[in-house]
Image (cartoon, rainbow, N blue to C red; front, side, top):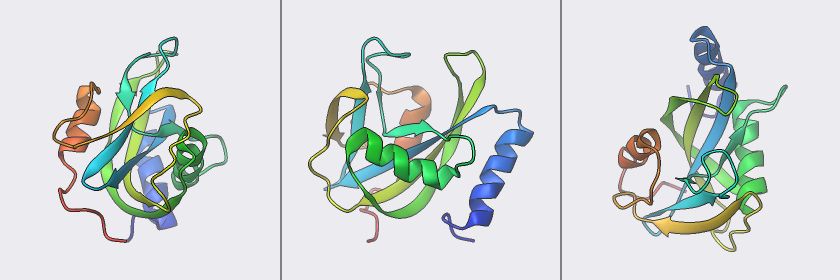
Length: 152
């Protein structure tokens, strides 16, 4: 079963729901020249100033992969070319005090520039071994990615 199969994605959602998770976020690890794209949350947002990867809420009626494509484009202006791998998930308390599960995928994009931010105030391409200030959970996801570039 591939990471883009409807069955795989449905299983991710079903496992999260069975664990009592109420919110889903789809997140993209975008790599270029051995670096990962990080975006910084606006200072007045929940967790303002924190660096993260492009990500966003899975809306009602939308699959995790549909949200991955939409959110990556909306937040960065970049278009996903291919979903390469599923890198795992982590759970966190959201601004409403309930649990959200972030599903993290390694992706390629059609072009890496320009990065056009709509919901963040800065971006940077950083080595996976030297990420900016991210949460411990995201740090573990980034640290676990293969060091070779993704296949196209």
